Every structure is written in structure tokens, then in C-alpha cells.
Image (cartoon, rainbow, N blue to C red; front, side, top):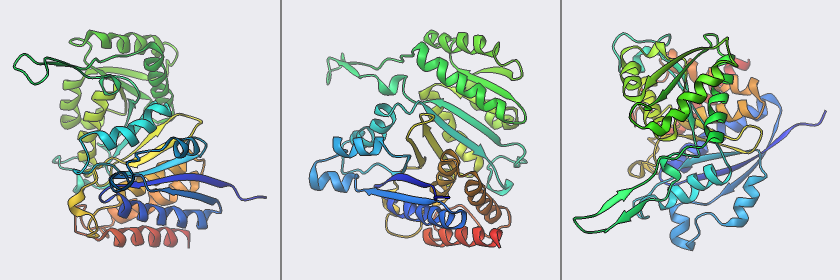
Length: 355
């Protein structure tokens, strides 16, 4: 039987991106060796450094090649030497929008209560999956400025939603809720104040008829933020808009231990999809071997599951869980463990599990 090989584009990016991606790739290669699949890794230099040298952000030829691959592993994008938003929109935005990666999937799972800032909350209280719409809303609309630079300036950027975009993300969320034991789905919007979001409310109600096994709930986004602090265990799967999803998932990241462990998938189911840590590029820490690579390693776990290598995904997830729950990783604070040290620990834990 011929070994299956996965083609993966690697964009390490800015700041700590190259360091955490290197550890993610080390874990990925170890998983490939352990579970018998091949890797065709194509590493791209696209970053602020590359742009400063060449004026290229993401050339069309390279983008066309990436479109034909199985997955993309992204480090971090952002550097104060570039205009705000230039690199983010040129790399992350282009991948999300031009590849139509319409699902942003953010698991929020606490592994040990010592990492949660909420008093008395443990792993049974924080285990949710947020399904965020990824290609609509204000982020993709053109900003408009009237009388720019004057005291009469007016700035606007539309919150725009389509039936297609809304229906497919809510349907996907129902399908994911069906896969989980609780089968519970919460819609998060602000339709009482942003009336355009009644499209979400109406489609959610209609689709709930197709999924009678799924128990449903509805929260306005401000109430959802309070609920995530007061009673995070009440939320199992949640579906929300692009803008609100960006905000509440970072809140959720803190519940599970911080941005250093939070990963996300940007999916177009059945097509090339993007996996990344959700933290920033942290340029102050670049090259110091102090950045926590667990978020990138967790993104590798998500990527392996998407590629159909579930046994490998379970092994990586299990290794990370073992390190966090036994105290071998003492803290998630920056500098508590070295970047390369954590990468080695995960690979070693995988080997122990396999023996």
C-alpha cells in the first residue's frame, strides 16, 4: 500500500512566527514518522522582512500554487515596520477571502484548572467550540471617509451579511453540534440593536427544524461575554458573526490558559484550508527562544484531523494534555520554558505514549 503524502504550504511570517512554526513542524514530522504518512512541505518567505526586501507581499504565482495544496500552516503576521493592516490583509486576509475559507473554528478547552483565571473553574467547565463566520461582516467591506482630516470627518464601514454566507456557517455549526455529546448550539448576535443580524436569527430558527436533536439557545453578544465568565460550562458549541467571533474567541482563549495555547482553523470544507496560532507576532520576543509554541502545535493537531490523520492528531493532543496536566509544563507564562524545550517535550511525550 502506497504511503499517503500531504502537501502543506508553510508561511512562518513575522516576529516569533518562524520559531513557533519550527517547533510545530518538528512535531508534525514526528507524527508523520510515527504514523506512516508523508509530507510535502513547501516553505514560503512571505513576511514583512520579505516585503521590505522585494516589495512583494504574496505574489499571484505563489498563491496559485498554494491553492492546489492540502493545507497551509501559518505562523504570525504583523510588524511595526509595515503600515498597519498591510501585511495582515495581504497575507491572512487574502488567504481567508480569496480561498473562501468561510469557517473559522476555535476550540476553547481547558486542560488543567491552574491555567484558568476564573476561580473554581476546571476542565469540565471550559470545553466549547466557537464557529465564527470568516468571510463577511465589516472586515471585508471597504472603509469610507468623508471630510477626512477635518473636524467634520465621518468614517464608516458596513456590516454586511448574505443569505448564502449566513446559512452555510449556521448549518456547519449545527453539524458540528451533532458530533458532540451534549448536542447544544448557541447563536450569538446583537440582532436587537444591529437589525441586519436578524438574518442570523431567522436562519438559525429555520435550520433548527432540520436538526431536532440539537438543543438551541440564543444570546446577545454582551450577555454571551458575561455568560462565558459567569458560567462557561453552559456553552457547548456557539455560532456567531465574523466581528463578534473575533472578540469572544480571544476572551475564550484566556479561559483556557491564554493566547499561547489557542489555535484556530480557517476552513473551506473539502478544500485547502489554513491552520494557525491566534496570537500575534510578538516582535519583542523574536529570536529569544522564549515564545510558547503550544498554540502552533495545537494548530498542527487541528490540521492533522482535517487531513484525515486522526490517530496522529490524537497523539499530539494527548502529548500536550499529558504535559499540562502532570505539571511537566510548569507555567504558560512567556519565558517559563524555552520555545525549543517545549517542542522537544511534546515529541518526547508522543514517543512515550507510543512505546
